[in-house]
Image (cartoon, rainbow, N blue to C red; front, side, top):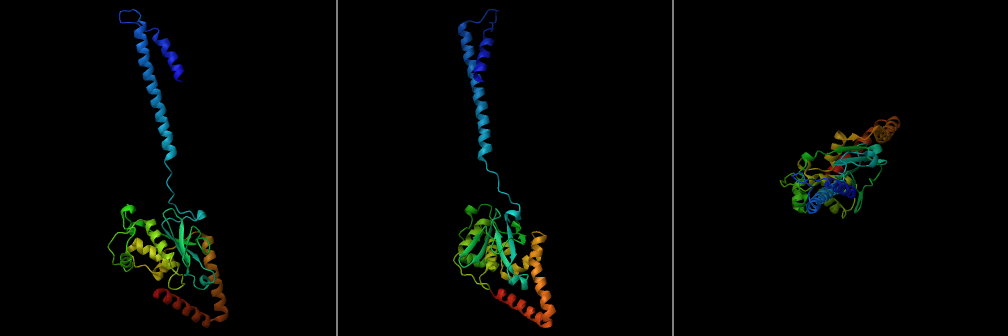
Length: 272
C-alpha cells in the first residue's frame, strides 16, 4: 500500500509549478517529496498502530463472568441451595443438604469431617434455592482493604447480632468459613451443612447476623424457589408416598411418632 502511494506522489509532484508559472526545480521537488513521504508514512503508521491497539484491546479485555443462575451448569451466584437427603427427607421434608454459591455461582458445601465440596454438590442436583440480596449484607466495596482476617471475637459478635463492623467481600467471607470448617468434625446435629451456611451468613452479616440451623431451615422452607417441576416432584413425592403408607397402616400411632420425630429434630437443631 505504501509503495503505491509513493508512485502516485511521484506522478503528482512531477507536475508541480512555481508561483510565476515556471516548473519548480528538482531540489524543491525532492524536498516536497520528502515532506509528503514523511506525512504519508506517519498517517499510515498511525492508522496501523490504531488498528493494532484496537485489536489488542478486543483480545486482552476478558469478558465478565455471568452472574445469572444456570441450573444446567450448577451455577447459583449469591444463593443458598438445597437438595433432599435420602431417607431423612422422606420423613422430614424440610430437612435436606444445603450449600452456598460463590460470586461466580460455584457451590460450596460442608459434606463431611474436614471436607468442603467445591463445585460438586453432595447428594445430587440442586432442588431449591434462595438468592441473597447483597444490599442486605455488609459487603465492603474493596475487599483487599477490608477485615478479611477479622478476629474470631468479631465473628462471635456478628453471630450474636451485636457487631457493628463491616465485613469483607462475598467470596472472602466464604473463603474464611471454608478455612474454618476444613478443620471441623461433622455432626448431623451440632456441626453440619446448615451450620456451615449459617457461619457464612453471619460473616456476611446478612440481615444483621444471628443465623443458626433453625432459622436457616425456615428461610429455605418459606423463601426457597424450586429449580423446576421435576425437582419439586423428586423432593416431595417420597414424603407423600411414605406419609400415605404410614397413615394407612399406622393410623394415629404413626401420626404421633412422626410428630415426635419432627419435634425432636427441631429441638436438636435449635440447641446446636
